[in-house]
Length: 342
Image (cartoon, rainbow, N blue to C red; front, side):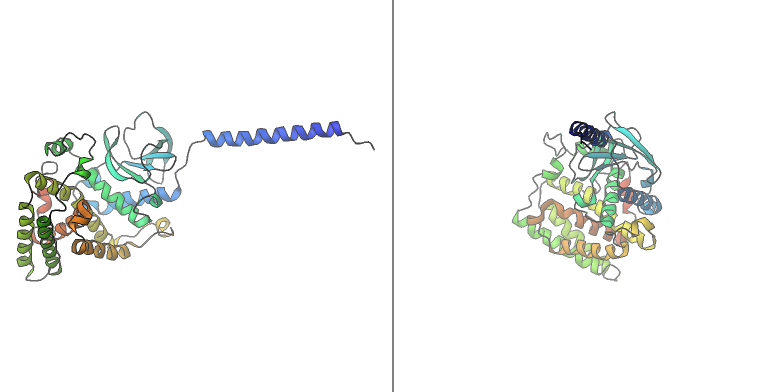
């Protein structure tokens, strides 16, 4: 039988055209299809909200009333959770039963490495955070703790006069971006300041070690004197900056500590416990506390500079819990009293 090459070529051509059309359609569908939020990220966000709502009120009265708006930043898209009035550049992705939130999305604008809180969307204070693997948190448990840290910043900023009060510190020197909070020229390398800082931190550590001892009050008095000597060695503006950093970041780190202590009786969801990078909170608590105490004891002001306030603030909060148990009332009065640490 004669073979019809022309007919066969036409059939092959039609087959190739159909195949090309199919591939093009699939690529086009992928290009225009809505993005997806990974299930494990939904579980993590749900857990952070559950922890905040379960134990947060025992740490800070009123914190569960603060919108826990989260902007999750991925390589290609940003996903907005628990925001009451998104801006018009966001589109509705889904009404998510896992997080209990309408999820909105847009193309990525912020850094995928962010772990920060600021009025990122329509003037509302938002936690802007990358995926665990893209941030310093790295693992599920630490990432959730960071979410709770950042939610405390939302609690700090809840008062309508908050940003006005921050500006009233008059430390920005015209910097409207807010970067002055990171870049302020504190005398970190001054030799005398460093000497007094070391005395300040070592008396804090000693007081912590005698926290429940009858000698504790005497050591607390020594710590307060050392702290005051340190603050007297810098200018009034420097004191305001140091006090503000302790108020903001130091007590946020203290809040992480309080959450971990409260989680001793908390049972995580099965979905969370089954994630490969989940660390039981009781294990995280031990390493967390030791790490923070080591930083207070060993870090040099001249080397670590601003970031010493995180661990130091945690330590100060613990001491005040013991020796000034009503300190939180002063901290939160009048919508967060920025002068509390001055």
